[in-house]
Image (cartoon, rainbow, N blue to C red; front, side, top):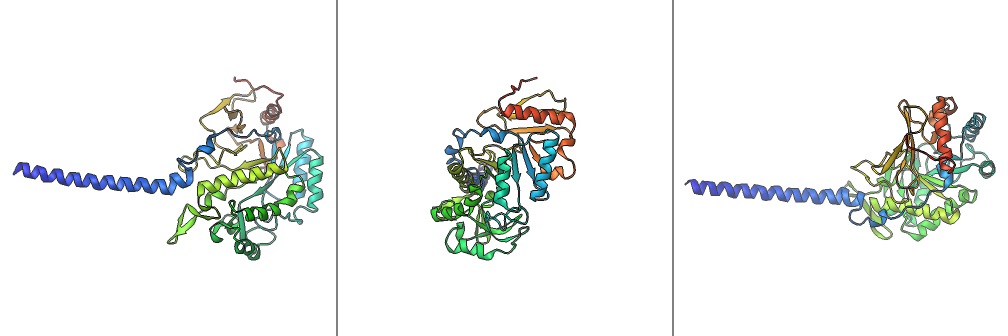
Length: 364
């Protein structure tokens, strides 16, 4: 009796283990199909581990980020203040809203009067100009001059320029569809919209993070892939198209073109960052390969930059408040940068000297 009972227990245990193993296999398969493949691209991500492009020197100098008033007058006011207090600024980052709709690339002249003349004036003064953009073609935009833009959206959808047959996603600036980067006709239309500002000498894009939203629906449930002109495309593939294609097109207009990312690098989402074309981002969290060097600017300050020279990732830290190389216009509304303590000022100056190759940073 004892032997038969033990045999039954062993059989039941074996069946339970089989069920648990099957459940573990199914959970692993689900994890791979829902997270690892569509967001990380494993194992089809070898192209993302090659050499990265060199960042143009101008992108390593100080940036002014005006994202508070979003008016030309405010940009001019800040530039005058920086010049008065001898704080170096090379690049003007004009954030949203600057266009009439997202993303038609037409400058809102109520915010930036005579934009062609204004941009040329900034360039003549030696400034670089970077504009905010996303991959969305909106049917509704929250804070632009033209909030309802269904005709603009439908023009793109009806011609097949949007991924997923015009599938729309609600994001923080409204609602719209994803431009189809694998569709040559869509790219010709998209680049045509960008042509005017690129002709005016825009030096780069801030590619804001709508690309991780790329998805479709299965039985009403969001799924991290959708149909594109080239076939089924995962979120990871779309993210790489967004990064690489915008960068590559920019290079055809300007050999020193650069793109800026608000990269997501949490381990559960995008541990490798955006792509190998993430040129420079002062807000990116430090990666394991980064080297931290002390700078003679006070015990609470340090400068971090990537150990891989090709990446040129710069970020400045302070114990009390971040003081990034990209000077935040939103923060300036309450606390002008030239009112920072002398240690902040010295660190910004030293960062500029490093970027220009005139200052050798030494570990303390």
